[in-house]
Image 1 (cartoon, rainbow, N blue to C red):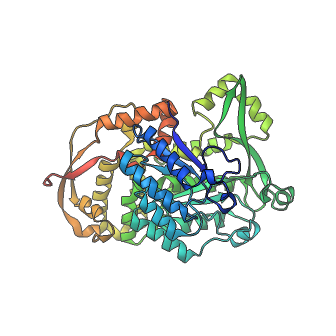
Image 2 (image 1 turned 180 degrees about the vertical axis):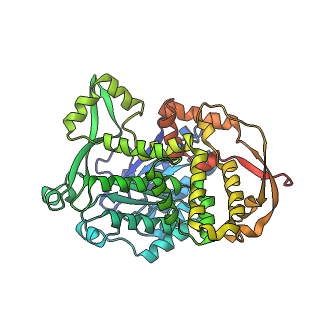
Image 3 (image 1 turned 60 degrees about the vertical axis):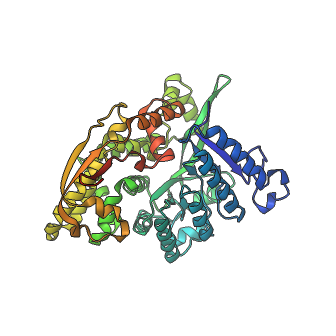
Length: 487
């Protein structure tokens, strides 16, 4: 048996077996030095080489801040070459020393995402929580460098924070979207013991509305006693109502979906026609909120479950989930999972094509009637994207169409996409083009699904939410597509 992610912790004051001491305050712990780290990583890699899909998690909130992290990265690179593991790495990078962080990510074959957290962009909020972000100019520079190297960038926001409003939160989302960040993670404000936000003076001063919820997957039955890890969260403040908080969560959900590489063809088109990414997100968001759109049903399910996961007291949560039927719902992931991840999976599985179509419809709406001459190549891009990116059927029943298909479109979208930033505008690739479209290797897909079944269970939404969010890029499931006259 094995666990879904091999965890290596460092900087831990408890000095447990997998604590990797790298900070100055732990430098006296010679037994946890760099050679110990390498030896343990090597031991893990030898055990995991038959399970290449398992993620290596390094439990360090500031990886890359220390010079020795480069030496650790070099060792991980050697493990990748000799053991073909790890193929995916999950960690949080530091908030500075981005030159080193980028070098480290490049060393491990771009498997380490770069974290560019800001929490808020409201000056008053940053003063209250005693935080200073890097400049906007530097932020854009770092994101640009990640794109040149093919490294994923991740940004974190927290809502609602003191003095934050719906308007200032939306402005922060706009900045991050237009900066080109690959994934924007929006977290609900947690009131952690010992922190400023948890103090009564802060709660009273900023009118913080408090609720409780079960932390995802943090529960268990121990010697017949059901135990739950429950967190205290803030869902409203004097400057943001609960309904405004829900709207912020809603926009964050739309951005969480449409910022992913599944939709990078649309992102490339946006750049060519001079429309920023946030404008498209707002159009999609507003269309969904009206109801009746291709994604409205899933969106409102997400909002409803966001409400339902909140409780007025810890005692109410324990009383509810100690009942066997309710506890089974937790075990099966029907409730209590990470909602962004859960509903991303629902979109990909249930509305794969519809979500792509909605993005293109939003693009055409932004272009307006004065751009009728561009509809032809946008339609070609739409058809190419759907043929290439329709991955929903892989996850439904384990059976999918593996036959070759033919696609004929008015422009050579494949060549335009392949050339990346060096390509000319898509309009310049006009000319009827025929492609052959095929599914990925069915045996390989089924192997990946079977491995994740062992870890996460057979519930398709729980399994697949982890599969496409924690373990793989969407790219693993894109179809093969090439011109019929290519060798």
